[in-house]
Amino acid sequence: MVTIEQPRKTTSHGRIGEAAVTAKCWMNGVPAHNTNGLRANFAGSDIIIDTSDPSKKLLVQVKTGYSPAKKQVYLTQATGEQDLENPKFKADFVVFVNIDKKAGESHQHRGTLGFEHFTYFIVPVVDANKMFRDAVRREYDRPLIKTGERRKLTNLAVYVEPELISKYQNAWHLLRGEPL
Image (cartoon, rainbow, N blue to C red; front, side):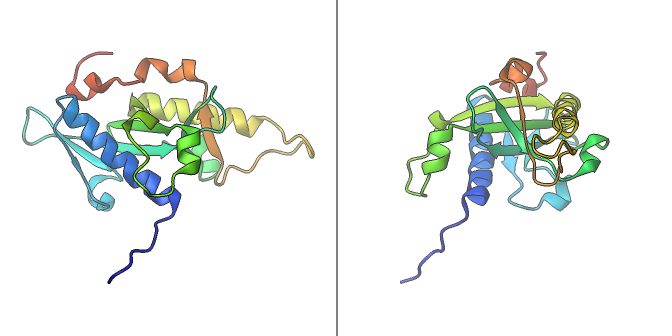
């Protein structure tokens, strides 16, 4: 009998988020295909969406995680000071998948994590980059309590207030080319 090593939660949450977004696209009439880890071939994208023009595809990045507080929406991790200036996302859209905190923390790869534990925000890349950069800047400019020094941005989890992103919640129609 072959045993399978349990994946790390952060890895599995990312892959589960990608699969869930692909499924939700199809459920919303958007033909989507997972890149299955071949991101280098697709500008760092996780999902490719067919358009009415067979020669054009939409590229989608998926960022999955959970927020420690209900009054925050998780975006992704910062990688360093370059996030203050350079675009973080390269695809046409970014789908932020937020996992219910309790379900995310207790997830043990036993089939208990389901669609009901996810909240989706479908954001055009220009808006996603601005939202992310503004949030990183807020954290960077907020001094550390103990030392008063600037925060390090490497591996900093980046969050936004729900009111800044709420208009994109379940906005699957954007992937069909319909207006917000």
